[in-house]
Amino acid sequence: MATVLVLLDHAETGALRGSVLELATAARDLADGGEVHGLWVGDEPVDPALPVLGRHGVAVVHQVSTGAVDARLTPVLAEALADAVRETGATVLLALSTFENKEAAARLAVATGAGVVTDAAAVERDAEGRVVASKTVLAGTWTTRCAVRTDLAVVLLKAGAVVSRHVEAEAPLAPELRTRALAVSERATRAALVRRTPAAPSDRPDLSSADVVVVGGRGTEGDFAPIEVLADEVGGAVGSTRVATDEGWIGHETQIGQTGVTVSPRLYIGAGVSGAVHHRGGMQASGTIVAINPDPEAPIFEIADYGIVGDLFTVLPQVTEELRRLRQG
Image: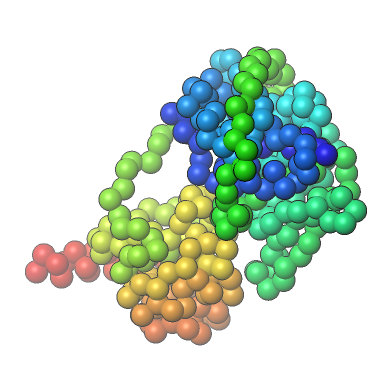
């Protein structure tokens, strides 16, 4: 029996991130008869989420307030995680494998000596009771199993990793809510969040069913503006590679590949996409594939119907402008 702690990622409205419930499902298996606790960092209203968490087996929800300090700063989040681990005695911590959570997990590991596995696709206990996480490495060509041997195991799961087992608990619970304030150290507040600008709502089609998909990869270096402008011009969806989502440049919901969304649009345009095997597995059924990459040896050219060897920041604006000219003419 063990206490498993789940980081409850949520929006500013208090709505749970969809994949959090997948973590609760995995946590019940790891607890092996013990309790599943949830950590809610911030002052957003938690009460509306309690019933759904209870249906997924969460026994206790710890709401930690950081006061005037922004809880979205990763040093602050790391201190909240360390505090919750001490408070609960948890031996396992599960969180979504996001850019922010990876950095917080690394800071937590330094502070506690925990073993950390990121981008896990599955997690379980082996015959010896150790926490074992599965993940792909080397561009998806190998699947590894990582056994955590430290007292605290921190596993960050990719969204969709346990969706097939995303089920409610047999016996719903009424979670106990425990609230407390966290005294954040001066060290954790050396950096400050100056401004956050939310992305504007989009009327682009759904990625999995779009007829046209414009995809950006490592070559964007985080600037998806040319990708988005072209996608809007052709009425298409915006997609990305795993590298782009891992770097935090764009949301995980845009990731195409074996570990993301599988697409088969009539037209696929890949800009700055190398064509790694795990990405190709999610798009090679596209009707027409157009590749734009400065490297003439990029693997994506092997399956492309049309290839342009060039810089996406030069090519895409020209393509967009020509499409506008043709449309107006």
